[in-house]
Length: 421
Image (cartoon, rainbow, N blue to C red):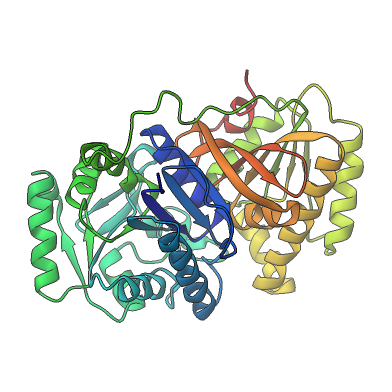
């Protein structure tokens, strides 16, 4: 059977986040890294996710890569399509959420798509078109200080409207709370008014399931991974998806364990603090050593005496003022490239030293590591925490168990629980 759902994710951790949601709800899921070659074999899966590194890419590049991914997924036989972005709507005034979504809508000829980044289990909810992180608005959550995509406006209608050439409407909480029929009717009404997008409120998994049901006939769905919670039941109801006994089963991969943390989110900083009390931890200082090769050499020399019975943690995560100081000295892009290049080299060195279970925190860091290791596909396994699964990574090197963690996700003890039996 061909795959049912074809997904395009704008970063690697976001792709695994979506994949874990689909596996949890009964779909065998494979994540491929970048757009496969035209004649590449189609994975044996119910859902395929093409993971791109397009969230902070130039707009034209992000659009071109996303359209190439769509073309490959259509050729693979996928019947419905999903554009996955972060549950904090990470973007800039120029995009890339709006421009990519515009291009996908135009190519599919569907004229309309919903947009819902809500993920209540991880504290992301949308109410009256405003995105909340926990109990505070997005622009008061710390995301306003994000080094690459600072989010200073919580009103998603305004944010998406500034990025898109189309207009944006709202399906409000009062409608969503009435269920799938009311949501479907509201979206039809917005499309008839000429709206290209509908921001859809959601504050619970019940809402997400209803939104998914209402979008059963949509060619394109856009949002965070939470919105995918309602899609597998549509496919089962249509007779396209069989009940799977263990869609996330993965084999054991023996070897050393390690964590690489490049995210500067509050959640990751807390996780590093908790892990430091228990496992060997190295804090990289990019201000003191502004050379990626030297940073990597320092980290690997440190790890040589510590790989063994317990995981090791190597972190470049830092408080906002330290990140700002590095960016002021090197420039934003150069500072990011320094950390990504260092971690990619460190990951390669750790694998050579026998690490076979690796957690990577941060979307940009994960993209750099996966690319450096030559990973071609990820078979999605069980979740460690909501939105963060273990995966079986296959490519040019040894088979690995790999977990790619969005910086904002995971409990405070995530780096410890990841390696529990």
